Length: 318
Picture 1 (cartoon, rainbow, N blue to C red):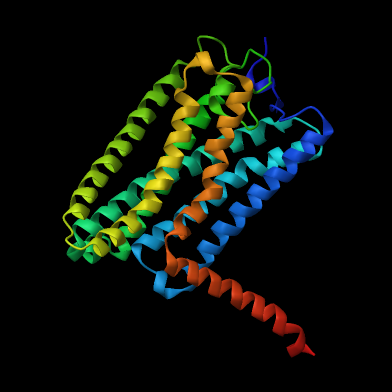
Picture 2 (picture 1 turned 90 degrees about the horizontal axis):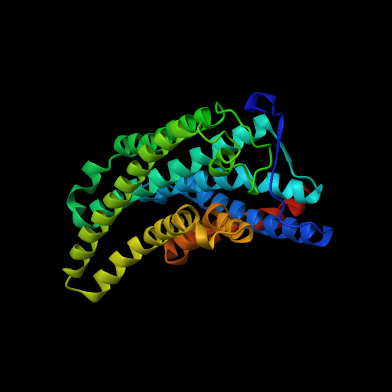
């Protein structure tokens, strides 16, 4: 019988056995990662550098971009490296770090999306009190609370999971270190503490979901009372990107963890895990910029400035 202290490395699930498919997985993940890095990086840089975007909504969006970059950077590069070098290994420390960081970024992102629903509620339902309720200090405190909630959640889960004795080998049935798959390696009676923590976290997640739901019920009621069609369209345009980001994260995550065991299979679990862990960070920049002409114009201006400097720099130096 082995335990967690005697395990020095874990074996992750490979996407493919043949070299051609391994390389295909590498290039596919590289494309997704570069798209996520470029999209989130451009949004972060634009908001940070342009004072026109120093508002609560864009401050929270800047934090969301950082969290998206962190979550996708935690799992995708390691998966790419394993496919490139045709290996499945990840060290015990690397696995624990991956669990902690991924939970940290995902939990903080969900908390931040909850706060962003409050931002949209105040902007539409209480516009005259927007500056008072969402001042700079309040926004910083809210963002810090989201990051702190993510840290606490990750710390509790990681410390508890890796303190359990592991008796079922070291092969993880997932392309990254994921708590449910690690718990399958533990002794049958030893994961009750993790179940208790999970119940507590699920209650918090459900509470956040109810908060978002109630916020949008109030928002839609207020929007429908706007007399002009143009005003309604503008209000919906403010909410749709956030609503799409919340729906994408919650639908993929819920399906991954709540799908019936009867339809579960290794290939389906692999695809679903990619949908909730890799796709949202890559799509969120496009979701938020698609209906925001001001943000698109600012990003394009930033890119044009960089290109212009790159073109003019050789001539200036000459």
